[in-house]
Amino acid sequence: MTLAEAAGIIEHRKLPASSGVTPQALSSVTTHAFDGARPQRGKYPLVVLSPASENPRMMLTALATDLASHGYVVALVGHTYEDTGETLENGQTPPCAICDHPEAIDFDAEAASRALDVSFVIDQLTHGNTAWHLAHLIDKHEIGMAGHSLGGAAAAATMIADPRVRAGVNMDGSFHPAPLPGQINRPLLMLGVTDSHSAGGTDTTWGQTWAALGGFKKWLTVAGADHFSFDDGDVLQEQAGFPIPPLSPERGVVITREYLTAFFDRTLKGIRSPLLDGPSPNNPEVLFQY
Image (cartoon, rainbow, N blue to C red; front, side):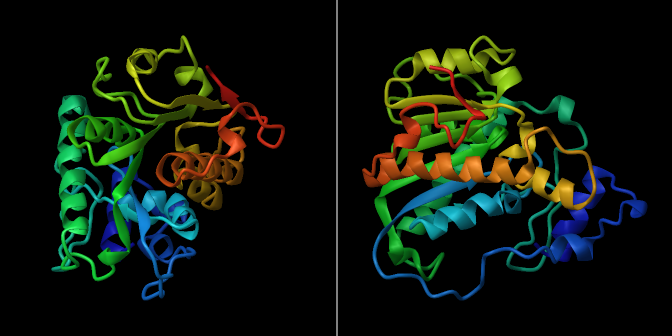
C-alpha cells in the first residue's frame, strides 16, 4: 500500500505513536506479490474480492496471492470513499466519506453500491485490455466473487444483480439483505465464526439465506476464529503485538485459503475436492453446519 493509504488506516484505527505502527512500517510489509511478474499462458477464471466495511482492498492480500498461485486471475476492489483511502492513478487518495458516522450507514444500500462497483470492474476486465494489459488471461465465462464482512454481503448482492458471477463466498458477513428464494440458484459458500454464524446463532440472516439458496451450498464455521481470522487483520495484529483470538492467525489464513480454493476449484474449474464433503481430521476447527 502507499504511504497515504497506510496513514489512512492508522488514523482511522486511532493508533497512537506509542504503538510503533507507522505509515512507513505498514506500507513496507512484504508479501508474495510482485509487480511485472510474467504469467503462465492460458485462460483462467476470474475471482473478484471485496473487503470488509471501511477496510482497503489490501487486507485480502494473503487470500489473493494464494488464489493467483492456484491459477486464478484475482481482482481486489477498492471501494473508493467507503474505505480508509485508495490511492488513485492520479496520485490522490480520497478519504472515507462515511466512516465518521457508522451509525448512519445503510448497509443494504452500501452492499448494492458495491455490487455496481464489481459489475463495472468485470465490464472493464472482460471488454478488451485497455483497463489491464493482461485481461486476455481471463476466462470471462468463469467468474466468482468472495468478500469479507460487508464484502460478503456484496458478493451475494452481486450474484443477484449480475448473472456473470457464477459462484460466491461470504466470509463472516451478515447478509444485507438476506436473499429471497429464487434469487441465488448458483453455488454459495458461507464461512464464519462459531458464535454468531453457527446454525441458530445470533445472525439470523445466515439461516434465512441458507433456506433461500437453490444451488450447491456449504455452511462452515471455524472454532476459535474471530472476525479478522478471514483476512489479513489478525496476522498484522499479531505482528504489531496486539491481542489475537484463540485460533492462531496463521491457521486462519491457511483455512481460509484451503476452503476457498477448494470451493472455486469445484465451481469454476470442475475439480472436486474432498475438503468440501465433510469434516477433515487435518482441519478439526472447521465445523460443517449442514
